[in-house]
Structure formats: structure tokens, C-alpha cells
Image 1 (cartoon, rainbow, N blue to C red):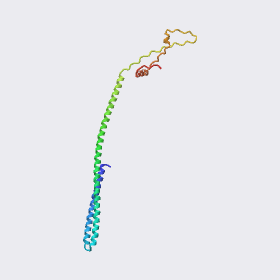
Image 2: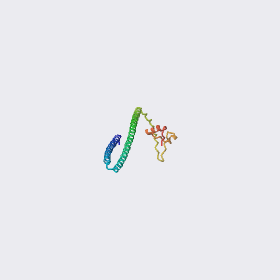
Image 3: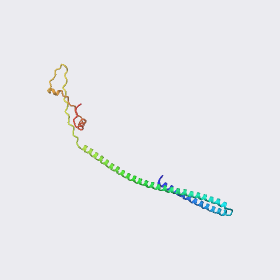
Image 4: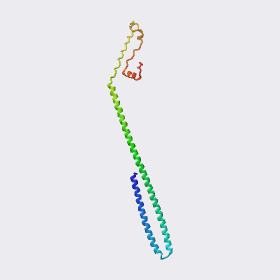
Amino acid sequence: MSSMNLQQSIEERELDLALREAELNRRESALRRAELARVHEDEGPGARASSASEDEVAERLAALERRERELARTVEAVEAQRQRLESVRSEYEARRDALTERAREVEAERNRLREEQARLVTESLALEERERATPVAEPEPTPEPEQAEPVAPAGAAVARSSKPLGDAFKDPAPPRSRIDEWWAKQLGSPLEAA
């Protein structure tokens, strides 16, 4: 329930209490007039009637006093409720103001982060452009592997090679691909043939 509805509810209760008080006052005055009229009528016939009417008046006055006390307690309760409502409303407004301020701070932080992200994206794009503009070194051409001499069929004469015997047993290095070269640069050492 909003503070406006609570305020209206309290005002309605106060109005009800004021109407009840007015009604009680009206009844009390009517009772007093009726009692005075009875007392004047009862003075003639005897003391018994006046004593009975005095008891009735005392009872009614006690009932009226009880009602007045109840009404006073109700008014005090309504006043206490109004004070609580005022404190809750002021606390609500303070919280609302604090939340509004925090929302502004969060929005400012969000904007700062967006600007930082935009700056980082711009720098990243600039780096990519620089990398594209820098000429890529062409990979060194790999020497063609030497052709192995054809194997002679059994019984055929073996042809003499002009190569030294030690070079004939070496395994020719396989050609390097661009991926191998990239990995070699990343790892810091050339890849060995598997």
C-alpha cells in the first residue's frame, strides 16, 4: 500500500472517530436531559425513585467514561500509527533517494566501461590494420630433395655414384609448410621432421 493510501486511511479513521465522538456527546447530552427530566418528575413521588434514577445516571456516566477512555485510546493509537507512517515514509524516501543515486553511479560506470570497450576494439582494429600493412616475409624456398638412385634389379651391375657414401644414407628433410614455420616461430625452435 502506498503512503498516499495509508494517509487517506488514517484520515478516514480520524473522521470516523470524530463522528463517533460527536454521536457519543449527543447521546450523553440527551441522557442528561432525560435524567434531569426524570429527576424533576421523581422528586414528587418519593426518595425511592430518585435513588433508582441516581443509580442509573451513575451507571450511564460510568459507561460514558469508559467510552471516552476507549475513544482516547483509539485516538492515541491512530496518532501512533500516523507517526509510524511518517517515519516509514521518510525512510522510504531516503531509500529511494539512495537508490536513485546508486543508479546514477551504476549508469556512469556502465558508460565508462562501454567507452573503454570501444577504445579497446578501436586499438585492436588498428593493430590488425598494421599487421595487414606490414609485408609478410616470404618463406624461404626449401631445396628439392635429392632423387634417390633407382634400385638396380638383383644381378645387375651397381652403378658407381659420384656422391660420398655418407651422404647416401642421410634421410632427406621433408619440405616445410607455412604452418610448420608458424609453429616454429611460436615455439622458438625449428620443428624436427617426425
